[in-house]
Image (cartoon, rainbow, N blue to C red; front, side, top):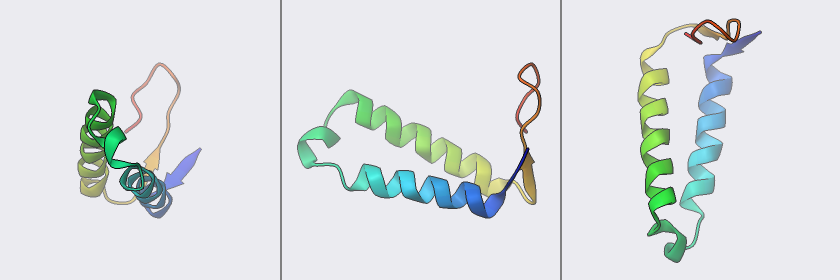
Length: 63
């Protein structure tokens, strides 16, 4: 199953929008901070990749 980079960027954008729309009280929590860090790492990893991402078998890495 191939996932194009545009689709992955769209998905990450939707996640970013969801996190930004959370109330301020929720943004102070530890889980929210961890989610922000994880999303930033994913954006960094996927921004460097060119072309398509290929999801391999479950016992092999994704990239």
